Length: 227
Image (cartoon, rainbow, N blue to C red; front, side, top):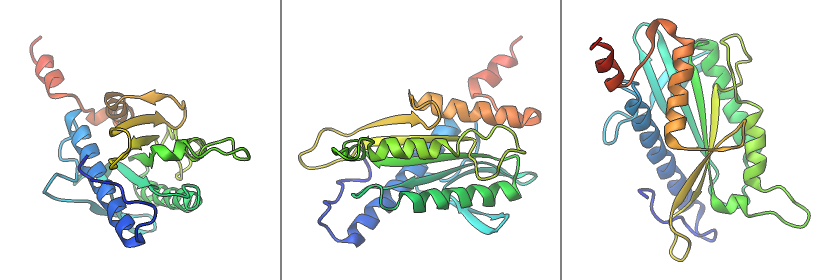
């Protein structure tokens, strides 16, 4: 994985912070590429190109990790990427939750029709930290918490909710650990989904919200002209 070896818990905080920043940047590029592959042209960021973009939200300017926009409508699709990569995993969870709610409110107040996606990454160890007194893992707790702000269906729904929220449980690169792996989990259904489902669901939500400007895959556009 491009992010490299995960630092040990004993390493300095500065090294851990740089790892988390690299992970977020790499995830943003992967997610943007995935949305471009299902028909969203010009989604930022690009690998080695333009990065995150700032938008004037309801509470002031806000940089967006992944964004699709046009000159006429402004922000149409956004993905907010967050992660907690080191123990104790539950320590900063409520702070991240508050940040996410504020971000969604900020963007939806300015762009009520926009589709805001949430993407939260946790390492596999976050699903292995149950104890005799704590029967729910940090990952399970995070899924339940973020499910409470997922599923915004109408532009009139509460602005703190996201249209869709997915969590990524990943096995990071380590010297003596298992091979790298990822699992995507829908925050509402709590079921595992694949990457295609994730991106196509985003397009489905966007098209339902914007029937005047639906998006299609390139092959769908070409096929539609051969009747």
